[in-house]
Image 1 (cartoon, rainbow over the protein chains, first blue to last red):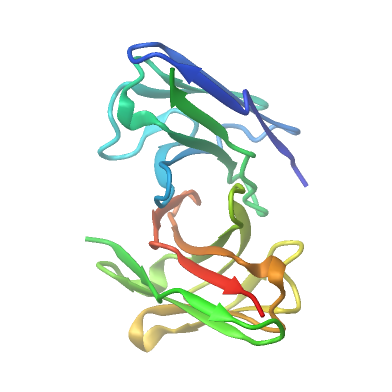
Image 2 (image 1 turned 90 degrees about the vertical axis):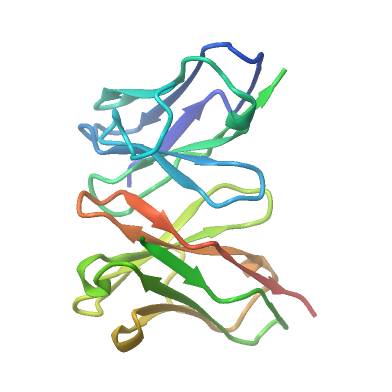
Length: 107
Length: 118
């Protein structure tokens, strides 16, 4: 099975900072990658699918890029409501494995 | 609007069974498969498997065979997760999540906390 890694595991940044999270599958998955946001104590929410397509209602400060084995989630200007754990997920085929998560908080 | 509403928290003793429900509304239930995801306390998201809501055919991820059963009642647009022979390590929040046609998870239930403790 394909393993998913994310880096960093956590980060702390100031409001307005640009934040970048990386996700690396152990094998190529084309663009079959989704990103989810889980705020503390809340339900995961879909942010991005097909590596770079923003889900309906997601603020434009979020963006995704990449293909194959190297993907990035970027928050262009970090806001207080972005404090959350972010998970990538592969969906090219089952198992639909999630990455271990990246915890983002405000400095 | 699409909604997935799960049953409430459960407290069970080791060895008991639990059945979690996930009632869908706002779309045709049999058009989209349903996934189950586990999140142990303080841990990440773990895909448990999915069920084809058209055929009822389940697929279980590694580590979720034997004691875990996915089922449906399409007459009430509801998916179920049953866990038998509960262990303390089954303590977790269990989410249902709809599988979009492109196979990411577009809608999630609110989660059901299952606590296993003597």
